[in-house]
Length: 449
Image (cartoon, rainbow, N blue to C red; front, side, top):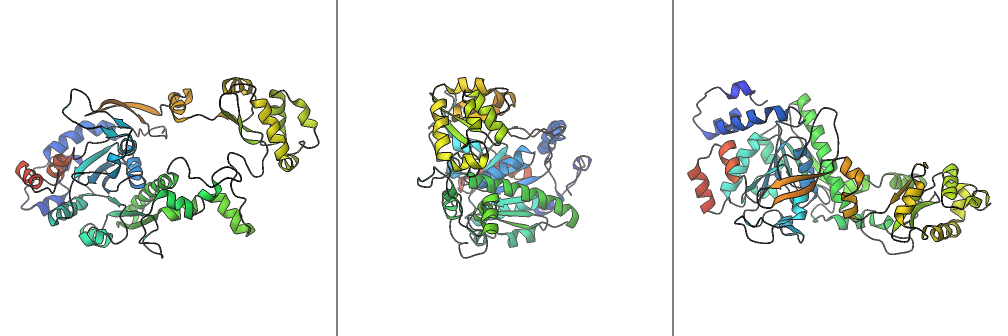
């Protein structure tokens, strides 16, 4: 347990930095900041949890951003010159403010999407001094998250075996493409490769057309979600056992798990799957996107009653009694007849006109919106899913908000995605007690930036 607030106010002298760190000491400046934020942290479920984040790109940063939104303190360790790979993944970039001194294209939108509520420590751990700094930080942390190929961090004594000796209560999450065991464990893992190899791409795309990847890196995102859930579970387990543990999270495992009912159907039936269906459903008709005069609309006639509602609303009530369409089984049998008939009707009006026609009918329907239309959608706005924040170098910008609404807790975007090395001094001085001259020396040697 970390010292309570009143204990932090006590004046204690320590004879070494090791004693300082082991005590859980935080500097006077840290105490002041903590006191100022105390009222807010009462609404943050993970306030007081500290995470050392050695992840890059998407799955890992998405996991740690979720933890940060919930109130955890995230220390993001980045390469001192290039930072997280996604800092260079643009355009688009959020341009730097004209009044500022920064040059270049700006901050990459990709990086901005998954790195809010984090502190950036620019540090090179290929040096022994850099490793020693991370060891000292690990002593103060509850969680360590990394996404290196298995065995890589052991070379730097930053693997679970090494860090658990330093901090037995540490929860250490490893995110990899294929896990810590198995014949593929040394392969680099990329979302699209895992989508292809583990079933998702095979069932994604139009009927009788080549397979396609999902429009977002969904395997990375689900892996980030599984990892954040696992970290929370491990924190609860530690309350019972007093011990940390290693979490082995693989994109491949998470992808197989999210095949869900398709995997279950294959296991139970022992038959090949039915392949790609585009927006359609293999066993419900009509249940797909249909063209309008200016876009597409998705209609779900999931049972006979809803099919009747659709027929009435589109002006084809006679279809309700047509022997080919009276039951779902018949409609599935005559899919290739019915779906083109519906398409011929839906093409006669705009998407907005059809939305107005179906409003209040009880029929499931939805416009197929692009990303800009989604972010401007009245329901998205009403649910507060887009937040405006101030970035220290770019000024005002908009980010997608944290999605879950709590009756009491208030997860939030409290700090913008950091500039590279923005918090190096803060982390080294406030958490490790370094002096200005020590940090300056490390910066001169290229160990930090």
